[in-house]
Image (cartoon, rainbow, N blue to C red):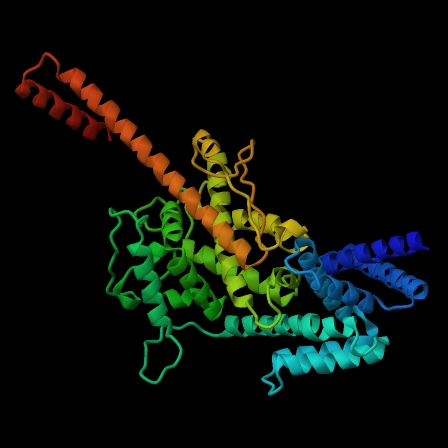
Length: 478
């Protein structure tokens, strides 16, 4: 009997995970009929295994998931138990959207998320849980009832509300509006000026690239040097709305050192660049692309599993902090991916930017949507490169595969995992700066030794004239 239960449970879990993944893939307009057919077949298999389990163990799939989550919450500071509780929330959410008996409750959550209701998330979770317990024959005041009300349904409501809020923020225009005395929120003009000042104040921004001024541009500065396409940076944010501005502002103010180096390496500040022969990309436009990609995943529900596994506290929603950290992570990883493709010769001009970004998103989708983390990856991050391996790499790049491709690092799950990731990134930046300084000092030392050898046996005037002639020869060759 136990073997039958285990087999049926394994089949049900596999079918549920595969169906949710295929359902999100089939939502793409380019999806084939075969993907729809496979998703429908797997859904039939999932429902058949659920019926078999209900006959064997005399309990619904929703009750079993709630009981497993409640049992995991009883253990404090357990990585596996924390993983089990978050997985149970994701499975409850999937069962709620797939169950034919709970369609009314699923629509109630959708209406709550899309409207400004006076009811709080806790009140809605209480009423939805009572309705679910009646329909699924779950005992009141049981462990399953407690987990559904206090943990699972509340998290589902918060994530659904966040998806609606993100969609609304993308539809809000980010026009250049100056600060008014009666305005409570920060104006877009103020945020644009702050991100401009932050990136030019970073130590990684070279002194040879002073801020370029422009009388025709908004704010009197040249926004093209940051990767925008015109005189008004708000015109480029039509696709991502205010979310694009908030995410780019967070990137350049919170991670100013890494962001400044990224913009310089993208060659966007070089206004005299040969766009036909040199590989470069507009950094601000790349950030807008990332925001649009995140918005599409959120609208299709593909981010829910990542949000559920990354949630730390059901009593407060940290989804916005997670999304802004995810945006910074994607920008950093794409930049390394782009640099590796430039070295491989795959990317030669700015015209290859869209193809490079599409290839990167196909890899990122598997790590963000399809992949399910293991218990050791929650709220932790340990993917780093050692100092010895860093010095062996002549290209000063991390995680480079032997064929030259960049291995995109795993997506962090949780706020603590993101903090660890950013600490690793900052450490690698310090290693790169130290390695560059050591190379410069070695070049200066070799130059001084050559000059000393050349000076031996010569008079001062003769040495100065020869040195001057050497400089003139270098200028002509350059």
